[in-house]
Length: 128
Picture 1 (tube, rainbow, N blue to C red):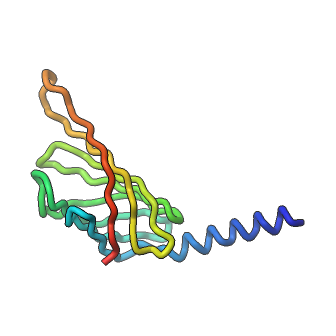
Picture 2: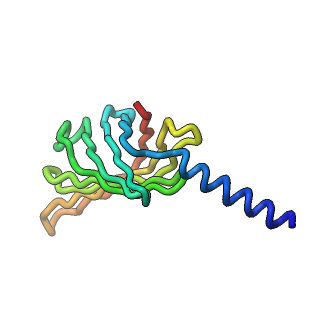
């Protein structure tokens, strides 16, 4: 009985937490002043606009897609002028005010004689 009660409470708490952290219609800014506006549907799919403050696509609104489940969030952006794609994977804080995410940026140099690049780092997005 104790095991069942714990499992039920854990599952119920997890479901309540997932519903308490909606990302629908939210604006976020990271430490580099890049920002995104996210829309979330009832299945946790994310869409929106991302504007980087750095690089060759700076301040150009670009589409963002992703997924959100509970505290876990993942999203990606293609940067056409840079011939690159970035993907973020992270966690939404318990209070829903920050997203801490690792990112991976892949750059296609377009020249088979050149080594393509893959960069990685992290961002902290603050809800506005």
